[in-house]
Amino acid sequence: EHAAMDDGGGDGGGDDGLFAGLVRPQVSLFYLVDRLHALLKGGPDAPPDPPAAAEPRHAASAPWVLHLSRRLRDDHLALMEAAQDVVRDQAEQVGAASTAEEALDAAGVLGDVLDEARALPGVAADAGPEALVDAWVRSACPPAPLARSIQ
Image (cartoon, rainbow, N blue to C red; front, top):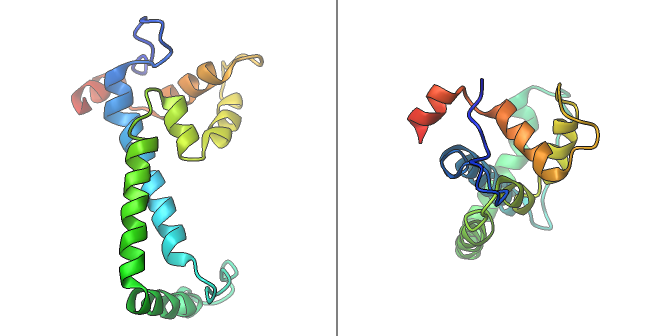
């Protein structure tokens, strides 16, 4: 049995403790890692992604290590400023979200979550986005006693 998302308040926001204690921190971390990775990976001289398992891992990552060291050495001030923007954007978008659906949308993963939720057992074929997000969160959350201890 998973912790309930809906507290019966009718606002569609789900259980505030579960959302604030489990969902928002996980979505925030994903948002920050994804955006910071894109920031560090970017640039006109970025090497292409290495083919999966084409070479030993250390050999395939060598161009990325060189690219990242150049970016950090040459653009560290601009990268620091851009990283501050990423953190500010996270606070304004994911941090200000009042529902799991809003947070997932701000992180850019709502579509993937909805697709994954549709494949969950017991989810109605005509379920709306709020019900799908609720089902997905319930499937991803720890059992109720653990969820309460995290809150």
